Length: 331
Ligand code: TRP
Image (cartoon, rainbow, N blue to C red):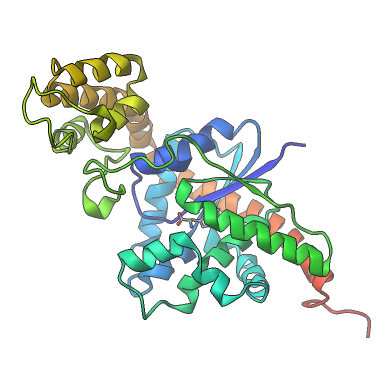
């Protein structure tokens, strides 16, 4: 039997290259060697955006179309929506008893979010606890591995602790899953800061060639390299980072010519824009045809939700029996 993967993303609409490098590419590469579960984490959206729920559904559909367009195969992957498998909420409640509040407050990813959103004194109970919900997402499928970006590793660590604690207290039900992280799992945005659609520093997988070119031309390079001829420092240049990932064939030449000053930033960016356009071309094609086939998307999700529910229900039977709660015992 193949080991099992579970991973997921918040539905944020169309995906960008950061999502691709952070996780999605890994999902595609791993899909033959594992049994794969991928969830749209729509409940997780509420942690930072509970007032505004109007777009969650369209963002879900846009994201699933992107997943399929990159090659996630519905015959090899269970693709489903978190809020459509209510068992996650039950397991979350049970797990929430096994975790202390100070343990949750130490989570570096949650801390960073709180800092970035200036939430210091008004973090909700649900927001602080979302890594516990994530542990339930993972463990309810008894997953062995979790392919995610670097920022999610603390959550997988917590998941392992919860699995261990549960098994100790109630008997062996859960495996301890490991995080699978790749080399480019934190591709920076075009301005060198964290890639995010709202900061307008992201290239979307679905961007047209002209948009790609415009965005790349605006990117920040080595601030000390002002004109062609100035020697550049590839190791501080965002564009060079992208060449490493998307233009590996020319990367050593680019490094040399940037350092010597022969290569100017404009030409270097034009080259990258072209490589990115080629790289994303097949994806854009596939996306266009998926866009027109809404019935197919619905079918994929209905089937995925059904398969996920079945598996989640089976695990919850084990959990309830281990904990001796939530079913009728002998009277
Ligand atoms: N927390 C993840 C994010 O913000 C999404 C997520 C929810 C997830 N449940 C998960 C990721 C389970 C991996 C496994 O993107």
